[in-house]
Figure 1 (cartoon, each protein chain N blue to C red):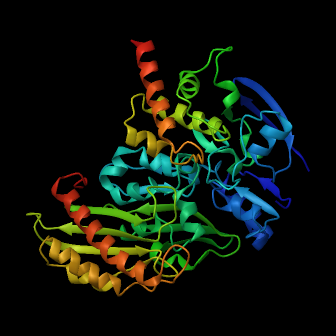
Figure 2 (cartoon, rainbow over the protein chains, first blue to last red):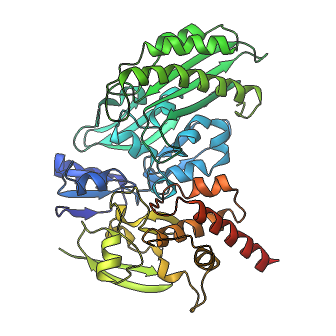
Figure 3 (cartoon, rainbow over the protein chains, first blue to last red):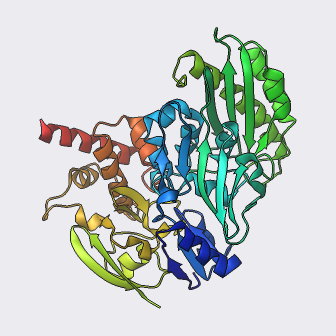
Length: 296
Length: 159
């Protein structure tokens, strides 16, 4: 690895000043599970590495029943999946963080970092988008807030400008009778990168038999995570049934524009979108019906 | 420029100098001679370099040594208690849960973390908990059995 300077500021303002002064030659370090490998293997370079884990705002992790979930950009996957309240209210996020690498990765990797790394195959971004999460950014020109579905722009690229830093993510309360799930397909049981993934969120009516609202988000089948808009809209008013989940899966395939690569062909990935959409919808509805998704 | 780092390793206060680019793995092995921690892939896939950092298992190849300032670290060298093997070490030996042995320190560290969090894990929980460690010799079966045996041994010693 090429030499760089390291700093671990304890205030957000100090971090932004250092990032702004160093511009594109600065890299942000949260859990390091992507950036350290990228620096070691020469995919990225840095003159200054800014470790954000000592900044209180970036490590805050607050959730009270009925409130929004506030996730500092440095909060680790392990912190999230160890929290039963988050698992009850945002189970698709828990599904995702449990399968990002093994335990050694989960104890370091953050959801904020997963978002900023902006891989098309990132597991946690689809759930964030399904929950209408917001990304709160600070930079030399002040603060701004962007919906997570507008954050990624291309593989490995996002809207952050030089000197800007992701500070927190907020996940709004999801309201009554909601359920959600995230699944991905990989050739082994764990420790791999998604061939394709799907996160589904639904709101059912009081009887639990009809879908009032739905949002399906796909990963690893386009340059950025994509919302399967047509499938999501089609589900509104439909009965909770395997046939309808399968039809939504068929519609979701149209939102995918995958590539062929070593993990799978475009045809295979498109097929997987149908399967994963169907399965995550079924799981999401099951969670509402069993009451395992917290009714807020 | 080298940075001065103060840390606690296996219960002892340790100070070292390192370059910001150096990984914790590099410093443990090359500066502090704690060579039980192995370099396998050096990119977070194999888990051979697993150590405990502030109570959580991490791949030390994916930690910068400068991040260890004021941290508490436990390595394989700190697992045996004054020459007495830890139940996991005992069960790995007795169950022949290793062949070449390169992955073993990482497996012991991850399995120890698992048993501390979940003293009686199911086979599935063991396999899931050890997913971040790769072994190319054993086929994992004997490793899983050794962890189950160690869990039993610990249960007996408690009761």
